[in-house]
Image (tube, helix red, strand yellow):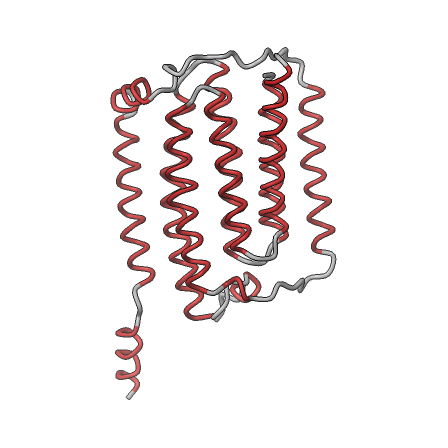
Length: 99
Length: 179
C-alpha cells in the first residue's frame, strides 16, 4: 500500500480531531478529540517505523500511549473536580477563571 | 496490490473516517465515546497490517479498553449526556470550518509540491514489531525513558486521587477561622 494512503488517512483523522476541539463545547468530547489526534500521530509513527524498518517509531508510540493514559487520568479527575463546583462540563461555563 | 487488498484498505479508511466523524457530530457524549472505540479498533487493525502486532494489542487494551472505559465511567458519573448543547458564539462554526479547510489545503499542497519519490510501505513479517524485539529494544536502549514513564504514570495516579478528594476539611477550617 502506498505511503500516501496512511499519511492521508492520518491527516484526515487529525483534522477531524482539530474540528472537534474547535466545534464542541462539551469538555469530555474535546478530550476525546485530543485522543483522536494522538491516534493520528501514532499512525504516522507506526507507518514510518515500517517504512524505514526501524523499531524506534513503535517504541515512541508505546511511550505516547503511556503518557496519554496519564493525561486522561489527570484530565478526567480535573473534569470531575470542575463539575463539583460548577455543575457543568460546558467549557463556556468553565472559562471564567476569575470565579 | 491485488483487488482484495485494495478493498480491505479502502474499507478500513471508510470505517476510520466515518467513526471519527460520528464521534465529532454526535450530540450525546456516550455515542461519541462508542464511535471512538470503533475508530481505535480500526486503527489497531491498520497497525496489524503495518507489521506492529504488539502496538496493535496495546492499542486495544490501553486505548479501547482502559481509557475509553474511564471516559464512559466519567460521562455516566457526571450525567453529562443530559446537558443541552447550544451555540453561544455567532459564526463560530463557519470560522472553524474555514480553518479546517485551510489545514486540509495545506496538507494537499504538501503532497503536491514535495519533490520526493515515495515508494509503497514494504510488507514485513510479524517478528519485526513483535513483543520480543520490542521488549529487547525497550529495556536496553530505552531503559531510562521507560523508568521516566513509570514515574509519570505513578504521579498521574497520585494526582488524580488528590484532585478528586473532597475538600470539605479546608472549607470548614476556613469557615471556622471566619467565626
